Length: 102
Image (cartoon, rainbow, N blue to C red; front, side):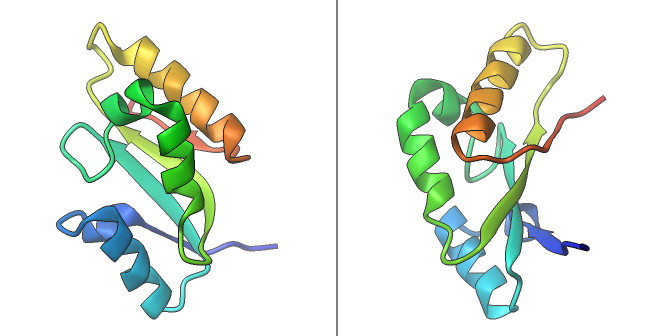
């Protein structure tokens, strides 16, 4: 089965909720949520409030979250903590793919 997903990064200038609504309007059914230091959903938000992050990721206007894209500095001393938080988020939202920079 082939899944076609759009990334919230396509509408990085919009708040997350509006980006998701735009993707619904474009008739996508799957979404990759980008988590970045300068985006509308940040790694610090995931670390600070995992429960709220899960709530945000479940409120996607009928879009199925199929992946997370973690855009951050991999050489940062906080990278491991960010990745662990993302892994917990992915587990709690039943998402198997996390894309990280190389």
